[in-house]
Length: 441
Image (tube, rainbow, N blue to C red; front, side):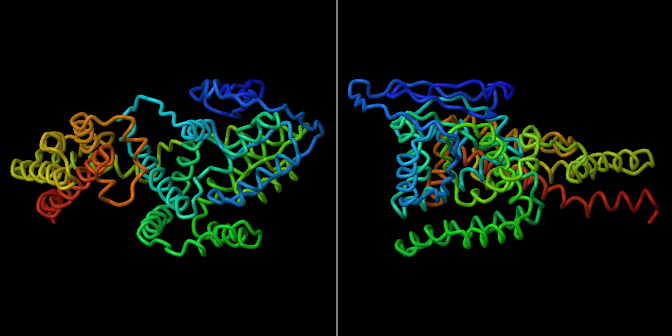
């Protein structure tokens, strides 16, 4: 669906009476909500409740793994009888929740080559660990993540309300989050994620109470302030921008009777934007993923291979014997990639590919030895969409290690790391002596 006609187009999401239409606001053209005919032989058609047609907006702040939030959502929708139930989901997440509730598994093709690119690789890993952490918390309190959103969709049918999907595409959000975070923020985030994964909370009752406490306004304000201070870039993309995005979509429904179901942390921000609508940014700017051509990291990646080549060329024209240096460079780059690949759990064929391509990829800023070893490893392990779908479903590192896609990702990282270490080891014995000889030091 194109952004231009997203507000005028509705899509049926599954034929289970009464039929519910879904408004996927500002979704990408590739995103659709497919129709499914489910349990038609067991239809229990209730009397259709007529929605109240009076302009109104009720924002319900929830905790995503709270049974009380599910109850609150149910009670509010029954009470308000809205024309539209707006949900903090995008098309993809909504479809996934609906599919899971009916045990539907959709076979999809996976582009492994695209996934192994650095930005997509990070998004894939972050998504897997976050999904796993949320699922575990949900298991602790007996509530599946997203239950309140699914309940909102279910009750919307019973009161004959349409559903509006008002959140931004999760992939866009994650990419903008990663792009907006500094290196320090990223490292801190990874560390906190690992610590939270390793350390568990055994007291189920206190954990459940803590979840409910997080819905209180003073607690929310405290948590949001801490998040903003700890990671300004992450806060901006994950919270502030999405507040604006959802407020933009709710603004277009201001002539309707709407109940909006959102995370408690978004309620204040959305309300502030709606009260000051001139502060809502242009929607296209919130969907834009910046591909910086001249970032410091990219400049360094380009300069390093150019510098290596220049040193060899200048040394050669000055009559310096570079044969030994070239051999050393090739051996260390290839050996590092080979060892790194094997240590990360690759098959021997993948490691051999890493060995062969490493010297070339080092001097080419757009290539990485790990991409090649990873693609070979994926081919050998026959990685498919099921491996991606199951990536976040693990209880221990042993379970994660048995996921074929995770093994491929480890091979990519291990190969690149080994190759980098190998090249760095040649600087002192190869490149520094050449530089000293070139400049007569």
